[in-house]
Amino acid sequence: MFERLVGNQRVKELLTRALESRRVPGALLFSGEEGVGKKLFALEIAKALNCRSPKGVEACDQCSACIRISKFNYPQSKDPDDLVEMIRTDHADVGMMVAPKRVLLVSQMRQIEREANYRPFEGRARVFLVDDADKLNEPSANALLKVLEEPPPTSYLILITSRPAMLLPTIRSRCQMIRFSPLTADEIEQYLLKTKAASGMEARLRARFAHGSIGRALESDIESFKLQRAAMLKVIEALVSDDRALLLLSSEELNSANQKETYESSLDILETLIRDALMLSLRVQNDGIVNDDLRPQLLKVVENISTSQVAGWITKIEELREQLVVNINRKVATDALFLSMAAGMNP
Image (cartoon, rainbow, N blue to C red; front, side, top):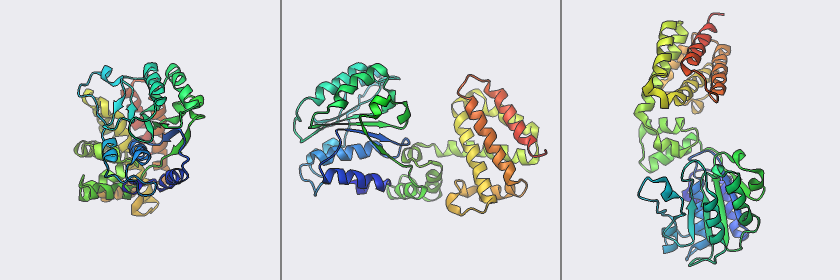
């Protein structure tokens, strides 16, 4: 059952013990980074509770119930209104609610409440997932509270979120929270190789820049990533050579209209390159280096800078990130960032 899922061994053991003792909480909160497999774990729980040919407490993954639970029937259209109703699997007792727009609606939570009070149609348990549960606002959260307080014995709610702090305390207090850890780069790389989603150096690069998320590793546009990374490497090289004209040109390119959507991801890449340079200067082993394929270029960088200078660059980038939550002029802020980083080269 859980063995086919990647990583989070502690979560696997915890959920297995709950199934073995027949004490699966009626309300679960799966929290962790996007793309670490929270929804897949939730579906495995739904299968285990409804499998027709279980192997101990584990789902067989072969009976009709397991097969049908694995498939969500998403609306064919892109109209947000089509997401107001519950997204069903092929199994009558398993479904999921998603936010049609920016918030989960009161009407959606009331539908869960109604359906949770029905007895299972064909299995032993009804299981309802609430994806991106942090999109509950106060009215919809309050609408969900009643069923969370007294979940019927044959119904289970699994809330899924990457931002548990955004949930009302009354919601969190009524759920058993299960925390998912980011996956290791090796776990992701092996998954990519095993599933043939990527091979060779591409699999290694995707895994190392995924920050623990298989979803991010699979969805990344590797060619776009390489272009962004090349641009950010030029920034670092311009810092080392104190080429301020090139820094201002890089800032202009980073803030151009066609780069608007990639601005923050470019900052991520820049910071990762700098962290790699810092680790190389500290002689950290290969496993910690994200951009290992750029080792020769990064080694040249660390020949000309000190550890304290690199650490200072990271601090300045983080300070800019804090400013991004308000409406600042990004071009002016980026100019100031790059020039202040350059100034640190020649105190």
